[in-house]
Image (cartoon, rainbow, N blue to C red; front, side):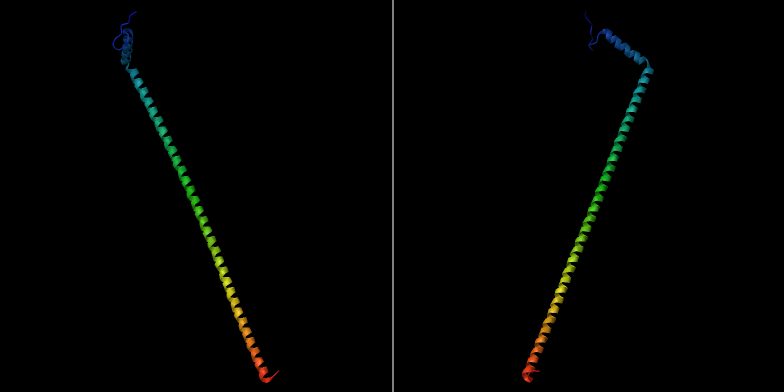
Length: 145
């Protein structure tokens, strides 16, 4: 059985079938319109799905930006708290240094008072020695009292 084949590689019977099918399709404009309409509706549905996907991507980007803003705000708040804590620590240290300076001033005043009391005692001892010398001289000069 030998089949005649044209340059397309199709048998004459298959070629006639395909040509007839093509004619039938060409002869039915309603089918073409329906197909065109269906294809257009499908393209529109696909465009709508793509728009919806894009809207969803945009919502996700917005949620991500919002999370990022919240994260940054929390970080700024933590930094403000750390700065407040550092400031409280500096103030506490400054109060401590001031207490130490005041204690040192008080110790200095006490040392100065003690030196002054010591000078007064020394003066008193000197006056006592002077009185003793005068009594001694009086005893020598006038005899025992």
